Length: 368
Image 1 (tube, rainbow, N blue to C red):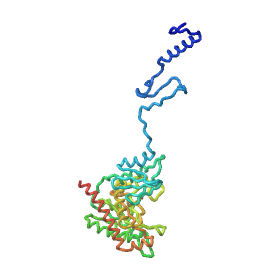
Image 2: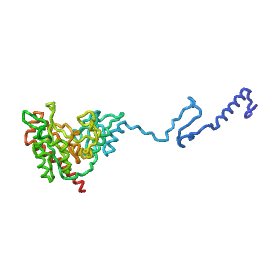
Image 3: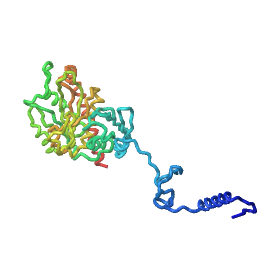
């Protein structure tokens, strides 16, 4: 190429021009190899390259085919999801406490503790509310036997309007005593039970007592009396004692769920099986909680909690049942109060109110 556009060039110049044309022509060719759509979607899919990309070439970051999902905080897979599954909402209220709410029901949980509150009344979980695989959650047994019945309507009707009252101890079994005041638990149990009988009969219920006087009735016979009476409800009346003379207040117990640990134990015992009374676990919870909260509200005593135990009188029941501890005979100050007929009448009034209200709610359900 001697001339370009009629202008003379030297040999060296001509060589430079030819090289420039060669570079220009090769740069206009379409590169071979897989396209953006060779693997993945046809729209901003995954790029597969047969050759490594030179560090001098800028890499374009493509959007994924599916939108990025922000990982949920770990607790959303725990108590929040458990709450949602029963129609409730869970929220953290401070570093150590959560609240689960549905309607007017409020369950307050404490991180690392079995002690909780439901509508302001103390209750105890089967296991501590704690991190499970790094996630704060209730145990499976507490989800089924506490959260679900606390938040969801409890189904079930009573088989009759018969209420069986069980005055604890009797005869040679005195129960706890306060020698300075001459108090015997067996006498207090019978006194409150007979007051309660009168109140419930005034409401129209048929009432059966497991004993009507100072006699010994074996524990296994008490649930049999209830079953033979076709009882709709069962309540066992007791008073408490402790080695600690300062202990005082009210406790209520229902039958522990199968396999779970009772409130006052550290592990499940040999009797941690399913008993006849466990057929009413949800109704037991609703009955026991109503009784316990009513007692606390009416009497304004120390709230020692709504608890669970495998008491023999509760195991064999064929109806919902609860055992109440109405105060500490071993506490000198509380014993003075228990020794007054006025206070024992208040105990009976409160029990009659909660038992009657619960029974009516179950009857109303049956009629509807």
